[in-house]
Length: 276
Image (cartoon, rainbow, N blue to C red):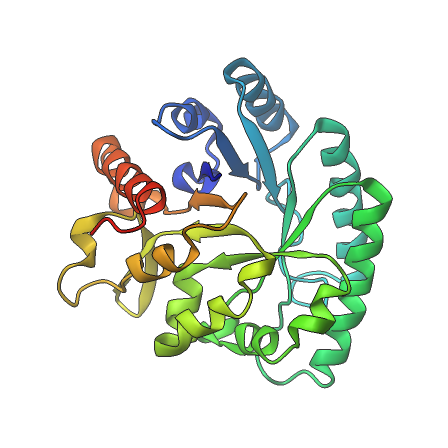
């Protein structure tokens, strides 16, 4: 019913640590991107094939690529970003990737005119690419500059009926939603339940005006130190075919045992929905 996956973010796509992604119980899917070069990507492909794992690309494929530019200039011109994205989709389709995930919609802040119109135009282009290359495209709305919730709000105010016309799936980053929508996060997420394909999982730690992704773990549901994720996971339990992706980063050097305990906890929440 579910797919348990881990993200290349957990090792910052360090080519010397790629083996670590294939060593966790329950996990048989990798979501990854931002490789240093083609040699690193070829190494990943070899490992993936050896272990029999499925994979999804979190665009961009290489660190030098565009991450945020499809709708608005952030680092490169949008048309250049679209060309890069189409090349990636074409290649991933040939390699059998389960999906290609892209940051969309993404605007830096609420200063862009006609955001809704540009978003729908982008959806039409994504639908065209999805049909052309016969591969699933998954859109992840992201926080903007200075934790701007503009993109999460933009998606929320877009109608489900209009989105449905394009048959594009969504990725919900629980951390971004908890930071951006705060107490409304669960209702914002629930609105899109029928369109969610990927869920990015992590707890959130704030330090020195920055925030970091920590591994999910039942102990971090206690007290007020971390934003809670269990209620969101339980809201999504029972939905078929979702990829639950561990997307913490290694900044606080979590142990493998700690990460594995978090995966076991996730498994208990999903496979036994009444478990507390």
